[in-house]
Image (tube, rainbow, N blue to C red; front, side):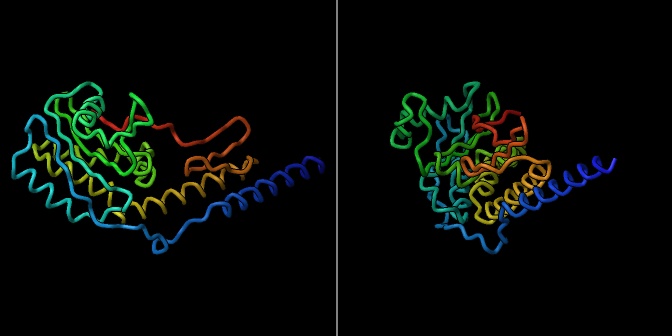
Length: 238
């Protein structure tokens, strides 16, 4: 009985020690320690091939976007609006880019090219209705667009405006949230807190040390691996 108690006691100590190591593994920055390099918003290009927006709508989008204090990683910013579109609206995006802005495609990806570095596109298709946000690899990383739940929250911000027929409002809300330096700084703190909690829980259960992949942490605990979800098309239908 004493031996069992000793084993249990030792296991508890190991768990507590692992939790402490996990807690100390991830640094959570203070909000005022995060300083993103911003240059203001890049000039907004509006692509509206089927003339959904009025001239006043377009002027409003350009004017409002000029007030965004965006990270310097975004060098080419586009709004896109499609009255009708494919079931996968990113096919429409790629067709438009290839026909009008071939320099904005990462040619190294071949026929399945993604936007080049520096590119950010926010848009909507109305039939079938889909909202989307799409960027080059560097933009997607810095704006955290590969975080599925965060990306969905950005696209959800567009929906009320579109549903009310106020497309410029919906587009701008998503663009403003996606490029806002304050929003991104808050998100970095939140992600660090989540990673610390994961490290504390997993190492407290006797898991192994963390491994950082593509800016996020993977935690291994026996057969369990908690990792970042793979990249998916950055669209949502409703």
